[in-house]
Image (cartoon, rainbow, N blue to C red; front, side, top):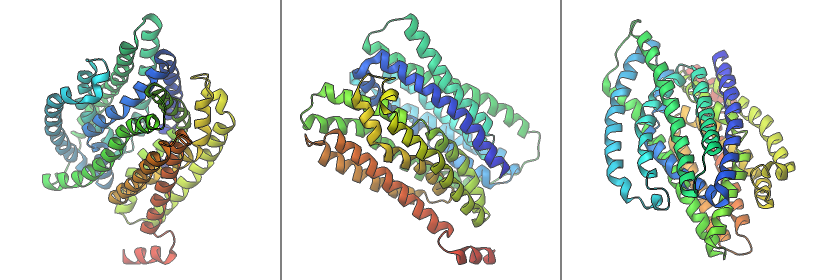
Length: 443
């Protein structure tokens, strides 16, 4: 448990610094791109994250889970097979993406170089996932923490220097903003791969045992495929969401320009501020997957119950004060980006969305550790269907518009968090003390 707590501390500390830097990054973007440019930037991000998701194949999740469950002598062989899978997968995906990229219409409104620049993310993300998965599995969270910090500080420094000494039109500024985001991923890739090579060389000096290739592949795929499908669904709906929201706003009577600006203030200002404390939730998520996987493989139900209790208490202790402060200081916080009362209203109205989102991330990590990926996926489907339905019904009405969209986001967040929590409680026997005794006696 000491490693567990130390990992949370390292990740939370670096993530706090990273989120602080992210705050300044978005301030620079807001001032340099303007309302419409920021809306364009936020609209394309989900599509970029979709490509990143496909590239990662969630290997960092499956590798970390498998590494945590197996003895150290098997790690070298697991990584060997994982790298082989990665080479084949990366080559195939890069070939498909190169052929399809010219025909993807989403990029037509952006600089022509953008679609080709994004291809860099495919090999970078895929191989970086192997290194991240290994370090997560052996609880070397310090390296993950450093990589997260490097990503943010590089992006901030690059944006500051480029926009400080050069002037760009809107199209070029958007390209620069996305290029710095991709550049930050390359920096993290170089750092993690270097650390991984050093660690791999050290592993060669120790005795090792082999696992059957089919066994390794089956274990990795049993996590990577369903997790990727789940995340792919979330990424696809995330990519659709900006266009859906803007479409219903236009249908309600707003112009396309105003709809884009309102979406930019929602995602670029309100969501940026509200997600600031989520660095704690993200840190918990990274640590919990291997920790819960190990405890579940050993049928240690008391430890899993203790982890769940600690997650709920910690999230409650930081989440409630955070959303309270956001509600009280919405105006001064949103004015750091734009002098507009609209963004501050969005921030105040979204407090349930933020609070329950802080719970969703670690609860989803516990579900993955318990092997309940399918359940998590079903929960997300229900939340998305309900959210999109409310957006379509209320967002298109002139008397609701953005209020209806906010209601949809709040409802979805609350629903998913509650379904996650009840499913975990049922699995680990929180509501039945006899369940634990039965499991312990059977072992």
